[in-house]
Length: 226
Ligand code: 5RP
Image 1: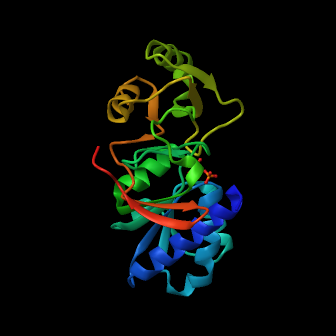
Image 2: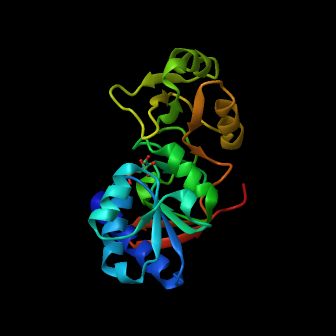
């Protein structure tokens, strides 16, 4: 199976997982990216049973509406029962790097609100140590150079993601050559730089469940203690 087929497999498993738990007023948080898109398409078959969703990006909101699935603003709902999203990397503690699609801030907000965070990945994303994937950092535009200098002091090589403006009107710096042995510390350090909106480390709020697609099917994994 190639990577796209594995993404389809985990997206299908996530639809089954979510639908088996859904109650009448449940709100589903929806991630962003190619795996999340497959999840959205799979949900469409059950749209009559879905009270509503909250999206982590304008792109996902638009895809949900195209499929006839109700979308609410996060401020209009009392809770998010379950949040389903992909990742760029995960470790065994289900700490993640996200933001390859530049939606990291809204993803982090929806994940923080959600009772349960289900990450859906193919097994190429499972790594021993985070950091081979360049770490996305969302930055207020006027602070770009300042934040880049501070990231260099932390040991990384920040690169401006040319031409990308986030749904929040900000820019992205991708930090290359930046191994992350202590994700909790690094997440906090980067977020403390003035001008940073947030970074793509999901360590303070890791996933609760990982649906991991591999050649032998989908495994359901829980975090090993950090
Ligand atoms: C978007 C994300 C995505 O979840 C991440 O980039 C994975 O994307 P894909 O499912 O397309 O591989 O964090 O900001």
